[in-house]
Length: 382
Image 1 (cartoon, rainbow, N blue to C red):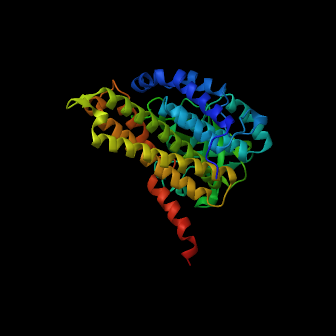
Image 2 (tube, rainbow, N blue to C red; image 1 turned 135 degrees about the vertical axis):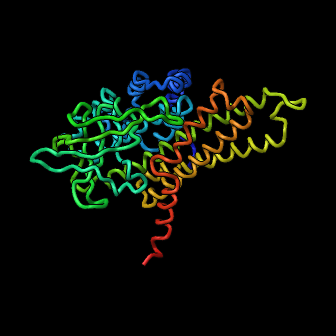
Image 3 (cartoon, one colour; image 1 turned 180 degrees about the horizontal axis):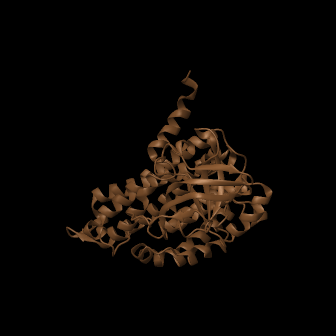
């Protein structure tokens, strides 16, 4: 059992850390305050190969693995959690097209996505179908060489700004086997966006409802075969869950460092806060929780790379544990800052607002428990 990173992985991690420090961290507070979507900076990440991290190299991808991606998003989120998360979503979309699309579809879309000439958004959740994603109502009806889409999707990151949308729509029967995956281009007649959502966090990326009203798209925009879309969506979410867990871990790393710095500088009762045993114990617990989270995340990413039979269970375990641990560490770091942690002069309150949603999206943590429990109990069910 080998826990050390390879030299290549260390170089990848260092590259992502430099990008986060130079391009993300200096602007994160301003982007949050002004609700600014930094498309120009996001597109710079493509120059480093971060727009198609685990997409194949013949279409411009980097051809890396899920552990490499976890290292990258852990590093990026130390600069700006919200922006790193959007880059993760774009990568998930690019990978789905590369992995499941026909050769014509791959060659048409992936080079423009890996270069970030085009940005992509993922459209699964609906106003009436969140955790119960297989109950989605958006429908694509075949009409010759086209589909006609009707319905809506909710909480779509990048809505209105992205150029292409990976949409799960019902082409057949009720339930998961009736769902297909199609691509919808921005500007297609009948495709529209709602007003930007007013959110607690993730303010450096837009979120809105997207709607389809007799929206006609070519059948050639379908990814894979009819009825395979739900399977694709769930496979995409295995990796997406690891990425969002990595974003929690990286943010919490930054919060712990802020707490270490602050408790070393701040004096109370005649000595620095870090000389108070109660806070020493808290800092020790925070570091321990993050180390456990990191090991769990890296192991799950390794399992997904190796395609082990229990990879989905471990991805769900990691998503639940790491996002919960990350939130708790950020919350504890804010508490150590006292009233200053509640002020926007310090980054803790933004970190807290940004990581909170990680316990909800890519499958709520309660659903992660359902996935784990079903897998544990599968041999006991009649």
